[in-house]
Length: 221
Image (cartoon, rainbow, N blue to C red):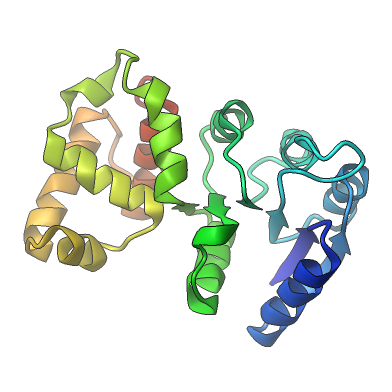
């Protein structure tokens, strides 16, 4: 699996390279600026990009902007944002095209290699991996928007939030102290209330999560 990595701090960049390579990833490019990232993404078209938000030359939002520009050229390019900051506007834009392969982790909340590697693989496979704090920030405005999300019960919203984090049904059951069957029933209800047409369940999970994070009308694929 080929990765383009963007991180301006040398030690962190080298550490991420070694970690990813130790788990079987191939580093197609490792860059430290926004322009280098955009060029690397368009040149290498990797299986997944791991991107910091703030990159030189201005250390504001070059990483996210480069990822957004690349996704306009490469539809569905999987992007995992790894940052210390939540950029709500650009995070929403990253989610807005309704395709999967999106993650947003906060550096100081990645507690072990397994958590990070699992997130990279999940995003590369077209899924989502969202930090709960990022979800909370995005939902500050989403909760005030009309739409099918208002049809969900409080428990269904809890289940959908855990789906956004990338939890499996069993993991959701464990977190909420309910049975796997109850989780499956809640997810079926979510699909129905968000008007997601029958499809592969994995695809509907992603569409449900993107609907949740965007706070927009249901997407039918």
